[in-house]
Image (cartoon, rainbow over all chains, first blue to last red; front, side, top):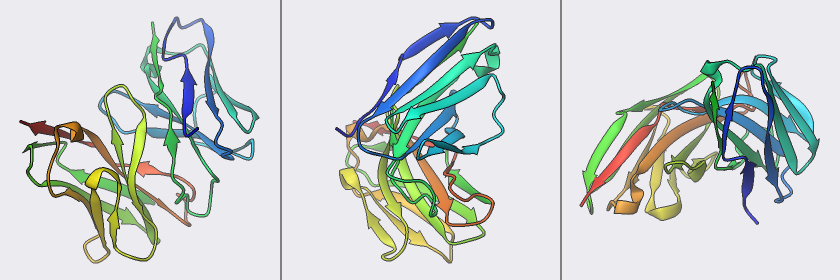
Length: 116
Length: 116
């Protein structure tokens, strides 16, 4: 199994809603990532988890709250989002993180989020 | 600090023609370089990567790239384009040290169109 599975594929939420994005991999990878991709732009790193510990937070607003309950799961909790947060949210994993991050990243298909 | 510049946001070729997608990087330490491909409504897939060693790197789907340190370039080529190559291509850089340790930075992307 070389897949990273993200759910839901599409999400529409209001600015007062609370929702969560889910990401799952069963490749035994110990590094997991959240990226944000706006339309016609490259992915931008948000968070990196290594061995279930948060290793990088790219100064992401607190309305985005990541969680890594175990080595296979990564969640992104959303609360009080703004319309400008509408984007494709990509999850990725790799065997390990660090040492120059020359590891191959496996990406999920993403969650297309629309904030109304 | 590290950065990537992809020359040409759109490249159009005929089926069977040479594909050349340009990428130049900036890195204060020896870089690791990657090319990823993104098909519509999907996540990113690794085509190839350069870490150390041989400067000509072969990847999947007949693509290859050459690391040229003197030119700070990592251009992607394919001798003969196929209709299925139509997608968006991202060059990316990471490195083993400095303030960008453990982070993958993407270029702006190049959309490849293949005409029959």
